[in-house]
Length: 360
Image (cartoon, rainbow, N blue to C red; front, side, top):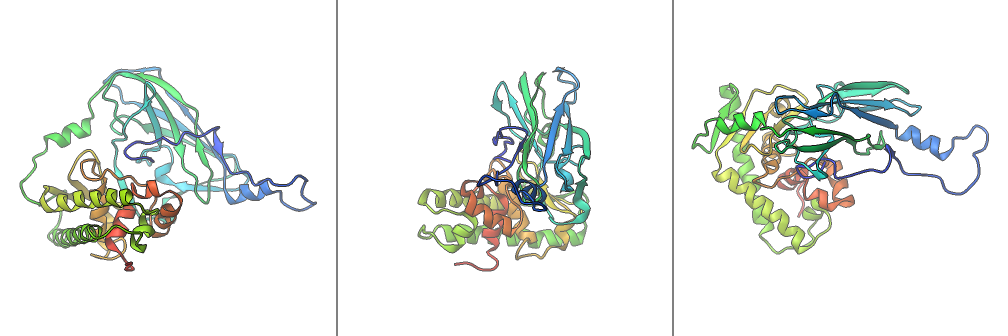
């Protein structure tokens, strides 16, 4: 997942794993080889992508068929939004036009992780197939030859993978969702509501909005101090340099200004209990709040106010962040392993702003 672009991480082969083989020699009888032990720790999936026809007119809905197969000897679990079919609602495809990556224009979500009901488990040898819609989730505005593949990042339970690549000629078309958003009426209010928000929900949103303003103002004030490798900065954004610090300062300047003066609309129509909120980065400043938002505290870790900061950072005209890691533990690990991605990670911005527990 790259900044508004998916699929910069081109991988060699279909499944990528880390070899644990060291010295020569076979394991003793009854012992597991390092490869077998690794396979049980990380399941191996393969992916295959196909397309129904080689050319698509502007009126056609562009879809690809994705098949995932568990090629390991143990069950493999993945989130439903990573699997093919209607559940795949985030950019898991790498899409290039004439060799140039195109923007992912679909939704960015803040999700609740660890729920059993959100997992799909594939038994050894089992496959799952389904369509993945490319239209209105990627920038297909220009006519050209598009190359498409499915990718999944490595995590504790499954190795990273990249599918085969399919090519299709696609006639340029307008994004119907963005076109509809452009036609909606924008009020002059700093905070408006849509999606039949109740009086109680409006009150909660208003309090969260005030909290988000406070969070973003305080974060910018903090970053306006003397740049240094503070624990608060390095915990969430990793390696310190004055230029890296200024990137985050610029982000929070844009975030606080948007909360102060942009015509923000919060929509209450989403009821998914496994999602806090989502936005379309190219459609500022509309934030869709979902089921998990209402049970979150107003302020604090993974709060309503923090969620609004997270979502505001996604808008391309604000900070254009992506979702490289979810949750405090994963965000801290990201800061250590890949500070560049941490500075582009929405949850990292949220946790820096929430600063809970407090770091100097």
